[in-house]
Image 1 (cartoon, rainbow, N blue to C red):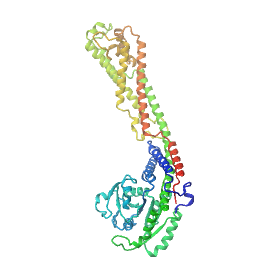
Image 2: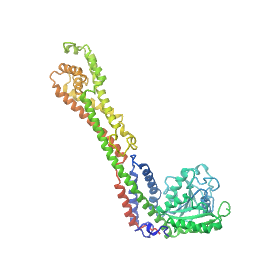
Image 3: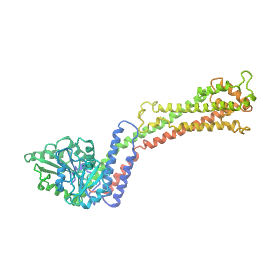
Image 4: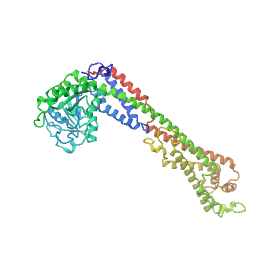
Length: 581
């Protein structure tokens, strides 16, 4: 019987064969896999308002699809999975052991007793649960049906493990899980309990006559209504004198919360026999569970209702994820615009440095000072060609020093200008949705990589070689072309502004001697334009690098694909006609 009010049941899914027609179910599986892929792609990398909460929701959606919906859709014929859960001390493990007729799950007064969950199934169904079809994140620990639950205390206390116990007391086609306490003091246990309930076809909630009105049970039952999963309730350790009043009150609470059809089983307070409840105390519950697994209509109804309800819940919650993804796409576009704006500003700053001579820092000035003070320089009458060539080694070493200083100065200026503008990324835009100090998972957006220096250095070497090819097309006698030739050094210095004022006259005097026929103004313009082009190319490389980082972050995907995938699931679900009881 469907436990939901008629108005809350999904429309368009009448009862029918489990899983509908094979082709329709295959289409539903494919549509669900597409939705799962789109949810996984929505990484939400930027720290927008509420992004943290939506990321948590995204992980919950993936867990729901991976832990229940997709495994169940792929194996609609797998055993009906019943998860037994409830608050601390409700008697879950004792009930599990009593249903099996053996101590398969530790029970006692120490809390928590169930640290790792126990899954009990009929021996013929073992392959289904050892394959990690469900709960893929839990390590399987196979156990014999007669093995003591304390046989390996270390492994069995690991909340990441799942003890899998075959036992003939469980009907074929049925499996039950004893889960940790929902209100456990151990956070891992609480998280695991929620994970197990997410993988169930049917929830068997255990509470007591004193605890049934507590907040923890009803928080879980509210989730059951939202997910539309089948629920049965066990009122455990009831005093006979209180049964009537408690059942009436509890039934009213169930009805008010949309669970009027949930079956309620009562277990009176009784003496345990070898740690187990008397057979008569649980006979009606055991019979009902076996009927749910053995009756095709009942079984298919639970499974169909669980799948439809979980998919409906996922589709509803995807809307918030899609809205958040759309906000991320807006931020992504703004970030890309800001990256371009910053690099354009860096280009303008570099251009200004090339024009006003600020690129010629103290290193360059010192290197030129060494030339001005050198023996080759004639203080009053100009330079002597003979005197320059008479001491080639010392003279060329000084020009090489200027060449290296020029290169280092331009590299330093370019790096400084780019780093400065990137450090202000987003800072110039008031009200930007991404805080400047929290650029998602990619702080490298505001940092230059080390290879930037290498790339600019290589580009400047090529620039110097280009100037050399124009200034001295053919190598001189006895000396190969070199970027440290006096004429090349002079042209490169003039192209960088040649400040302070004494460097420019000195560079021109060098050119009068080394390249008397050179059109100096034209060559300087050509050298400056070539340098600007090469530096612009390096800035474009950085723009592409930063945009590639944004591509990898995935913030620009938007929410359209998510919404389309959710609609695809809705259409496939209607065509599949899963039974919902």
